Length: 254
Image 1: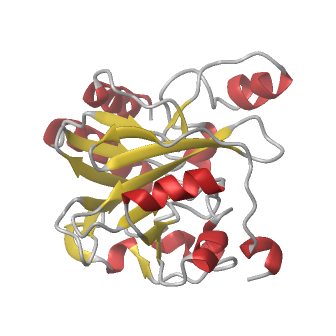
Image 2: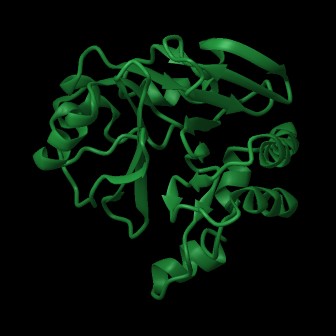
């Protein structure tokens, strides 16, 4: 890891927003883009924290984060959401890094990976969809992925007192249409804005071939079995109204 990758560099970000008693979200800027990114923080039964798609925050934000517990797990949901992974690993050397199997090579260009979704405890499912829990956790957090090959990204399910939350990387966007050339091209032409959806890039790089069918089946099954209370996209607004119905809508559009 180079010094530029590990030195603590903060870009503008919002506050840590509580979603549930064990769940927080913060949104931050992506340098050189108008698109914003999302980090999700989960407090595990052990009192330790899991960070999904890390965002380096200012010292006030980090102090608040550490008041929730000590970071123990870092989830890099795909090979593109790795920007601050090495910074967190340098700050918390005992942090265990987890990513999907198909993204491991790209993630390890910046930080060593300790485990992939498929190597975690509690395997279930088949080639069309598998589910795995953290080694030291009691099903508070599970990782699910689609199709045996590729596995570029999956979805993290978090259990809280009020129900299940589905946390995504780039497999779900919920960015509204916005003015300007960037949003016209990236949003409308490339199909990245306009409500909950799998974008064109998501279809091309994350759910190709059999994985698309498996993801569609997962969306429908999760809507029925888990009945999630909220969806947290990697980019865009949290879905809290009829989250299960939104999953069915996204599945129908694939």
